[in-house]
Image 1 (tube, one colour):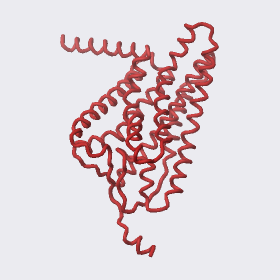
Image 2: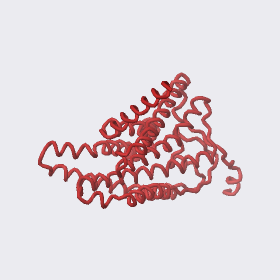
Image 3: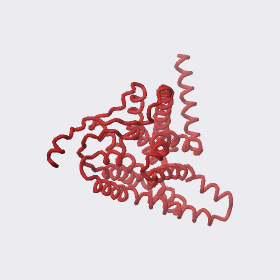
Image 4: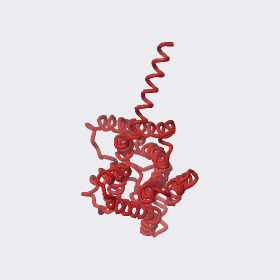
Length: 315
């Protein structure tokens, strides 16, 4: 009986991403909205990378890691948004199994990498505030390269999954997330869900604990500074990163903690949008608007561009 049931199953060649449901009146509006978000995300993060590379004043460990984070955000949004745009524009919600697994691998790897990069950036701020006299010696160029390379490597190392699928092919999300894909597997999925939970804990819990520990030490050190001006100056050096960490981990934890219920599927999708679409958009805005060095670098770059355009017109 089991053999006959297995023989009657059809091999799945594509999935259907249910996305935001059937909203025919809003398809074009959503397409324009996500197109603007994608362009703004790519432009903002590319500008951040250009500023970090071009301006000598930004050749510091903090901005080196920020440049890595901006590169990651470009890759991150490019893994999710182009497929959403195609679906909204054409109405085609299908994605091949290989395309879905590829998206899942890249998405999972980039999520892990971002966790490690945020942890590295928090450690950098910990050394700058809590051990300022040893900062230059500890956070040297070689160590920065090792931390950045380790973040990318460890993030991508944690994505390991092999599945076989049966006749079910509908994913109630706008991208290929791990748990919804695992639940479509024809084999017993309990072991795979447990494995995913263990891998997520092994590869995301250590950077989260490092980030949390760093900020406990940072806040403790800042509170010991006697002058109000000194406390404000010290806190301003890490406030942008703290905002990004709070938004990122806050939304991820909220999505993970919500029970898998149909009534909460819309809420989970909205929270997923925060860390997959909105976080890459607001990161360069947070760092750019709150950091004086970035604003000054942007102003100087713009002035050079205007002067160059004027020379070209005059010649």
